[in-house]
Length: 109
Image 1: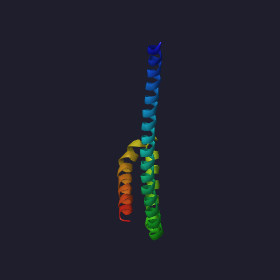
Image 2 (image 1 turned 45 degrees about the horizontal axis):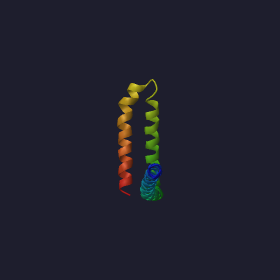
Image 3 (image 1 turned 90 degrees about the vertical axis):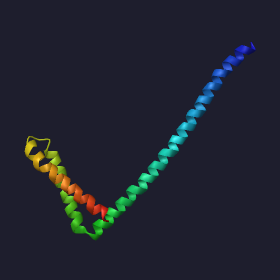
């Protein structure tokens, strides 16, 4: 009789141990994800503030960058239409040049 009780207690203990380990792993994962989210949020917030400051200090450049990005996105959207060959020929270099310019402006903030 006692052996039957110990057999039923062992699976329950195994289940509790497994649940405890799973809960601990979940909590560690949750903490790690929260730290990564906080770090990313701070970095993005800082970049956003730099971009706003750049836009306030250089409204002309910011307008040209926004216009260039708009042209690039427009050309990318047009590339899915029937004029693919002409857009691909001119669109890719224009988009690359504009994106490089934007990256350089932001890096120099």
